[in-house]
Length: 72
Image (cartoon, rainbow, N blue to C red; front, side):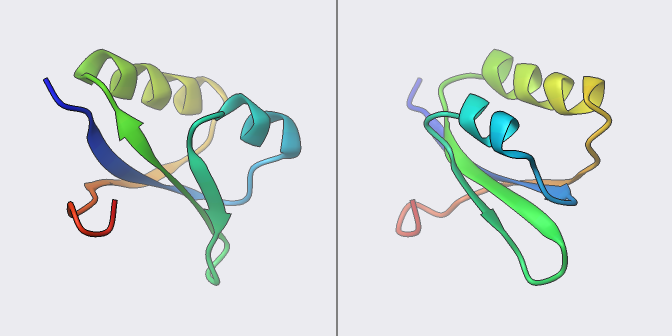
């Protein structure tokens, strides 16, 4: 299975420690106070692990969207 590049949009801003823990992902803030986390997800287990981590840290996930091939 080829990795799928996804954009996970989170409500709020992430601290430096959490950004460092997301090594391999591009993390940026948006103008509306959200944080965008973009990166390759090799399989569904990795995606579910990320979403579970955000849930355990009480970080609201706004959306999870695939990134088009050209934008990746």
